[in-house]
Length: 418
Ligand code: SF4
Image (cartoon, rainbow, N blue to C red):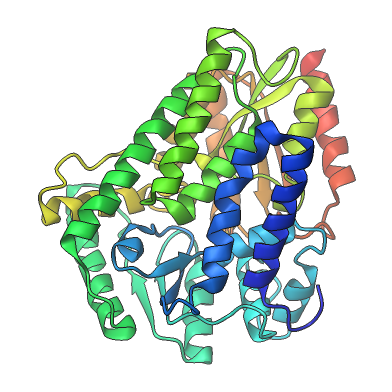
C-alpha cells in the first residue's frame, strides 16, 4: 500500500477483486463475500451521498447509527482487515509508534497510524465505549482530541444487572443527543423500530446457527465463524445481515441433516477462547485441513442472542440495546468481574462439546492475560479438558510468525491426537 492510500477505497477495491475471484473459482462461496463488498463500497461513497460517517469502537453496537441514517465503521475492524491483507498493517503500526507506546493494542495502533498518515478518512464524530480495555479507552479519546473530532464515550458500568442496563440506556440516549448535535441527523422512532426488528431477526438466525455448530460433526467451517463475527459488529440492524445469516443457517441445516461437515473427518473439537490470529485467519482452516481439528466456536464471534421483544416501546428498545451492548464480544470478555468471562467460556466449551481449548493471547490484552490462569483452572476443574495458552500480537507477524504459531499448534494437536 502506497502512502496516502484511502483505506476505505483500498478495502472497497480489495473486496471487489476478492469477490470477482471467488465468483470465478468458487461461485458457491460468493455469498460469503457479497455483503462485505457492498458494505465497503457504501462506506467509501458515503460522503459523496452526503451521509455522515462515525467511528465506533469495539464494544459498541451499530443499531442507533443506522436508525439515524449515519454510516458506522469500526476503525479497529479496519485494522483487523488490513492486518489480514497482502500488505499487512505494519506500516501503520510503525507510524503510530512515533506517537504512542508500543504496548497499545495493535488494532488501536493501526487506527492511529492510518489516521495520522492521512489514510483513514476522519469521521463526522466518534462514539466509543469505556469497555473493553484501557487501550481502546485511551486511544479513542486521545485521537479525537488530537484531530479535533467530536467524540462521546459511553460510560459502561462495572456491574451487569438491571440497574446497570438502565444506566447504560441513559447513556445511549445521550449518544442520540450528541449525534443530533454533531451530524444534524434526527432519531426517527419508526426507523429505530425497523432497525431493531432487523437486528432481532439476525440474532435469531445467529442463535440457530450456533445451535447447529454444537452438532458433531460441526456443519460449518471456521471461515463462517470469523465472517459471522466481523459482520455482526458493523451490520447489525441491516436487512443484508439477516439474509447473510439466513443463507448460512440453511447451508448448516442441510449439512446437519446429511450428517456432514466441511472436512472429511472431524477428529478434534476446539474452542478458541479469545481472538483468532488476525494477520493470518487461514490458520484455523489449516488446522481443519491438516489435522481434522475444528474450531467450533470462538470468543470474538460470541454475540449475545438477546432479542428485544417489545419494539413498540422506545424505553424497552433502549434498555434492550443497553443490555446487548454490555455483552458485545471483547466487552463480555473484559468488563466486570472475571467470573463473567470464565463462566461464559466454560459454558461454551461444554455446550459445543470441546475436546480442548486454545487461548491465542494478544500481548496487549493485559486484562485477558491477568485472568487466563484462573480461567484455565476453572475450565479444567469443571470439564477436565486441556488448554493451550500462547502469546501473539494478533495483527503483527513480526512478534511471532505464522510458521512459529503453526508449529506450536501442531505440537499441541498431535499430542491430543496421541
Ligand atoms: S484485543 Fe484486547 S487490548 Fe485489543 S482492543 Fe480487544 S480487548 Fe482491547
